[in-house]
Amino acid sequence: MLDFLIPQLASSALTSNRFVEPFAGGGAVFFALNPKRALLSDINSELIDLYRGVRRYPIEVWNIFQGFPSTKDAYYKIRDWKHDELDLPTRTARTLYLNRTCFKGMWRHNGNGEFNVGYGGQDRRWVISKETLVWISKKLLRVSLKCCDFEEVIDACEEDDLVFVDPPYRPGECEMVHDHYRYGKFRFDDHKRLAATLGRASARGIRWAMTTSVHPDIVYLFHRYHIVSIPRGTGRKIGTLTKNSGEVLIRNYKEVFQ
Ligand SMILES: C[S@@+](CC[C@H](N)C(=O)[O-])C[C@H]1O[C@@H](n2cnc3c(N)ncnc32)[C@H](O)[C@@H]1O
Picture (tube, rainbow, N blue to C red):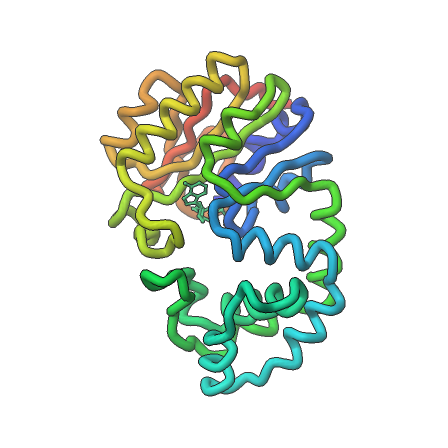
């Protein structure tokens, strides 16, 4: 997916003053594009706290993270800690630990806002190293971080921004289901609200690109823009589309390849 997306977005990112991701998640496109200036925003406050903590305290976070025991018992004890009562390095290490050791890296909360994904083992834990955290911390130094709804971020964008939008998919589409997300479901009404917000951004001359589900109801909301299917697999030539991945790339501008 990134092999397809990055060449598609590279020249517009280069010619923009700032790269903006209102649904930042793990920031895969941000890290791959490596823009000079960026705004990463997400409605998930624990995720944004994680970015803030790694940016400011990479070594402290690493030391706390590696000190957490690897057992199932320890996982449930650490999961029970109250996020808001911890200092930033501990809060960050806990979020990282839960994400790396929970079942399949899922992110889900119960009605009280408590993380409730079960233990998943330690296989994915040591993919993270001290060097990775220091590297991420440096990348984040030139990034503004925000925790809010997408509409606020996109409405505040300016003409020379490039906005990359990767919303939660319609429930049931691909692997994303609504309960991965903390603040309730991302409903079809939210997709309509997103379409209206991106419509306002287009009217203000802002370039945006979005990856989303190929579901006809969603694609219809954006039918007046440039839409291409995202091919499955890697290493394909730009513009050649083979097997469909069930996702589309929608842009309000025509990409000029350099
Ligand atoms: C598909 S994920 C983004 C994945 C990301 N591109 C990556 O590289 O990991 C969607 C993200 O949207 C966030 N989100 C859900 N509803 C939102 C809203 N109303 N406003 C802003 N972010 C939202 C979720 O917390 C989640 O991180």
